[in-house]
Image (cartoon, rainbow, N blue to C red; front, side, top):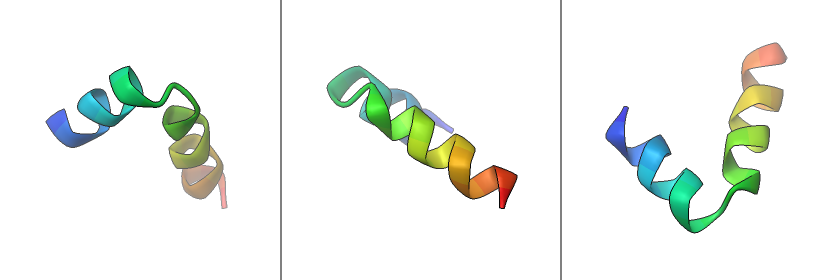
Length: 24
């Protein structure tokens, strides 16, 4: 998933949001 990697570089909190969504 390059999109997530790119977003993470721009916004480090994005990874946390994705993790929270995956947990649910």
